[in-house]
Amino acid sequence: MLRRQAPLLWLLSIPLIGLLYSWQNHERTVEHVLATHLDRVTPFVPAFSVFYFFWYPFLLLVLALIFRNDRKAYYRALAAVCVGILLANAIFLAYPTHVPRPALGKGWNYFVPITYKLDEPYNGFPSIHVITSYVLLRASGILSRPVRIAAAVMAWLIILSTLFIKQHVLADVASGIAIGELVFRATGRFARVKPRRQSKDSKWNASN
Image 1 (cartoon, rainbow, N blue to C red):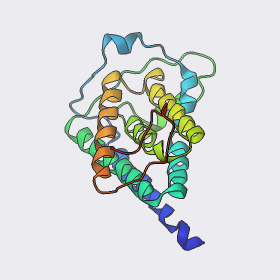
Image 2 (image 1 turned 60 degrees about the vertical axis):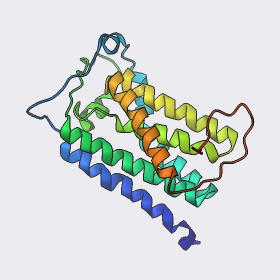
Image 3 (image 1 turned 135 degrees about the vertical axis):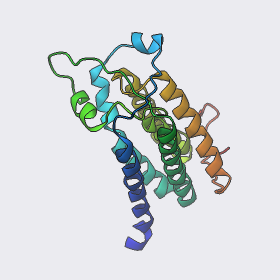
Image 4 (image 1 turned 30 degrees about the vertical axis):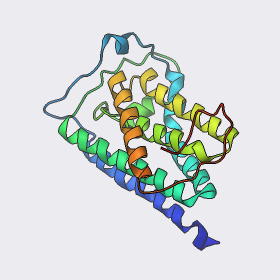
């Protein structure tokens, strides 16, 4: 039983690679600001920090569900997540950015103060939250329809939360989705995953 679950230990690779982000999570001599007018008029919605904060449990839960369904799909999704995080960190090193943050008002701001304290406004392009959430949205295509829909809804809420709590800008989100699609397709070349038979109205498919 334990031997069958042993591959789940590879999930530890995510926080280990995440140490690269911690190493770069500080102010740089040169920083690029990618905020546009659309970013400035995007409303600040503190409640969305709940979804931003739920990112890590979401990653682990969806990967565990994929593991129970198909080992090859699990390794593919995990590889795509890890490669995506590595690519993001390489870009952070070459192209550091800074995201302007709003002043927090009085009252309950949900998890925004914690997020701002743990996650500095640097290294936003591309968003790791977006890369990984999008990868799992794509990888969840092999799961049952109710689970697939739930995963997709949560993935998009996490992606939107990066904008609504002013942790990222539109360029970070767009680049995150592009890289997520790139790494998911690239890992698919090394792992042939048979998707679950789905209804015609299904929008999520793990195959290339």
